[in-house]
Image (cartoon, rainbow, N blue to C red; front, side):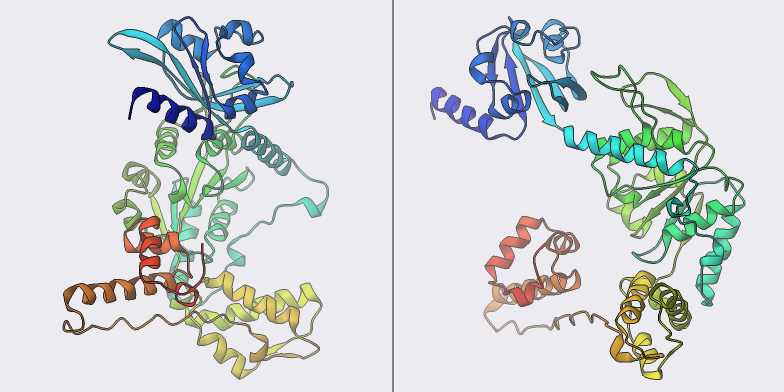
Length: 470
């Protein structure tokens, strides 16, 4: 391929990119300004290209322009958040990476790549404002946040009672707590119980699901933002400041990016935070409760959870047993849920039939206590005027039985076909076990999602075998 052909290909690539790309030469004249950047800034490419940056962008302070700083000081700026007004006067927030282009010590130009996070930033502000409103005393009961305590924990299973006893002891300390439990076991309920039985009970309790937000947004929500830290930034406290003196629950900590885990570790060690874009250290007194929905040792082995953060958080470790290991609690919990939803739906169901009880006891509850509650809630809401809950009212979604993974005779097509049959059977198992979720199935098999999709096509697997798409 000739140099001219390379240039044509590169121009097409630049125009197809979702990120904005702006390149200037050593004199500050724009030489590349792709379609995404033009749409972001509401400019026409012909009004920007081959013209000095300072002439086109007159409202931009050149001292604050990372592109000009890359030219003048040969300075690289990584993932800097910037807020400014585009040509239409609309406030735009981007995350920019800017770098000088240098060849053999000679400055060729500077390049800036911008990712539009305007909508994400708005969502961040909305979430922070909502949290601030929730933390303020409310006159109306309908605005009160539901508070759970140890009185809301029901069970007679020995392992569960030991878990509750450990949580009660944890409430009498200020140590960090790591709570492990499968989905639906009640991790946040345990966390709230610890807080509202502790010396911090009259201070804020805030919770953030680490899997719900992208990394840069999660960082600004946790640590806040500083005015002047970047163009258009305002002073806005994060959750650490809002929870000062109280407790912060970090739910699904294993979903937090490793880079942000490092920043969290520093906060836990130093007991101060620095707002995003800020230079001032702010002392905070916050107790951290964290939850994970996979065994911590597995997370460490897979490199998903930093070891230093794990040891810093795991002062007290609480493991919540799944409901399938608490069979003696199933009917006890079911009766509590019957009473709860009788009141909610105005029903008069006062007993479970023997067949209904047996149906509940025969299920293994992959969704744990939350799934049991949903089953009872559905049954109560759909029941007519009966006073007893029948087995026909209980809608239990039986999971598809895993295919038998047998051994095959080597003579059936030789080694290649033998291995292919085993591979196909393992793929079927993984897809069924994860409800057809290709990403999770690929992860359990230790292969890439694309590799798994290629194998599915290779073996011409039907929808019934795959269990659905994800």
